Amino acid sequence: MFEIKKICCIGAGYVGGPTCSVIAQMCPNIKVTVVDVNEARINAWNSDALPIYEPGLKEVVESCRGRNLFFSTSIDDAIREADLVFISVLSNPEFLAEGTAIKDLKNPDRVLIGGDDSPEGQKAVRALCAVYEHWVPKEKILTTNTWSSELSKLAANAFLAQRISSINSISALCEATGADVEEVARAIGTDQRIGNKFLKASVGFGGSCFQKDVLNLVYLCEALNLPEVARYWQQVIDMNDYQRRRFASRIIDSLFNTVTDKKIAILGFAFKKDTGDTRESSSIYISKYLMDEGAKLHIYDPKVPKEQIILDLSHPGVSEDNQVSRLVTISNDPYEACDGAHALVICTEWDMFKELDYERIHKKMLKPAFIFDGRRVLDDLHNELQVIGFQIETIGKKVSAKRIPFASSCEIPKFSLQDPPVKKPRV
Image 1 (tube, helix red, strand yellow):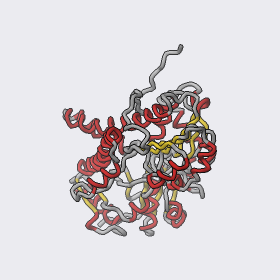
Image 2 (cartoon, helix red, strand yellow; image 1 turned 135 degrees about the vertical axis):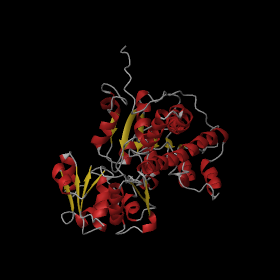
Image 3 (cartoon, one colour; image 1 turned 90 degrees about the vertical axis):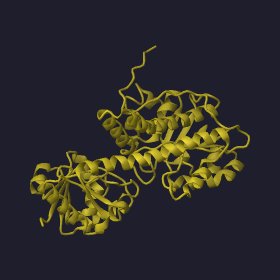
Image 4 (cartoon, helix red, strand yellow; image 1 turned 180 degrees about the vertical axis):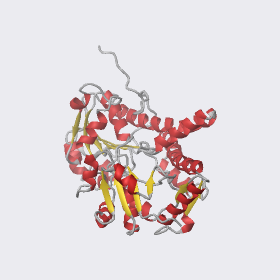
């Protein structure tokens, strides 16, 4: 059997970098070269400050970089030398979750490899299987044809996104009736046919994969004349958009129907904890909706650089003219962000937000002081926070007995980062 001794991976991003770093660590006899046209990114991979944050990644890279793991901009040379080039030889979709990518790579639920039925295709499949067999049990390595492999990736993410949108739809019903979506999720999650994974109601899913893959599925269905199937999956995206708009409406309604010139602290900008990735983050959408209403945002995230936050909010579809420079301030710590704020909004479930000194925060905020918990991270602190004096609003639950069940009256228009920016007439 053909043995792979040199691998080239094109693209040093959130997938290529961690995946090939783990392959290099688990296969010390294979030379792995990760290439990218972005010289600054490659320089970062070759430095002590890696271009992405992922728990455990730095230790993996440092254990094999310079030995059998290399990062380079010499793309043509790496391709010529390689026995296998990721992304161009066969289908090997990843099923990583940011924040747990290293664990997922070292102990995967499955590895999926798709290839043509031709002799060359099957030869490539067997060769790549041999690479993964260095650390993955054979029974966890699945081989399929190329279409099955690619569609499995889209379907897996679509099913996960569907579960999130499903529980988020129930959260709206809970807020309108007085039920608690966490209690509902726990009750249905104990049914073994359903299970308890991905039943966490929130301000909405983000990241590079879920929306992209669901929309790819919608496109395929439309192209193959399956309009009913396309509409079914489109509703998953529509519900996610609705959840974001609904949460922003709740903030505006609770703050006496206006946030104009009010300082609001946004805690968390990454799309989930334990990553610095902001792609399709719900924080971008919430910030956009609040900026459109004239709110002054003070944003803090422990892992997202200031430059990235400004770049995301300066997207033509998010803001216009000097809106970001007028309305957005990036804070160095959560206490600074909350100082003098009318409200704090938790958009990312960073563990540190459970451990903040909320009595200190309350003293520095304007009164009445509001907390809008878009990730249900403060559930265990509700009684304590209410004693301090906070008005708490959270996803899928009515916290304060003084407030009636919530149904938004504020209309916020739909918006997508994929849509071209809408030109507003100048007055």
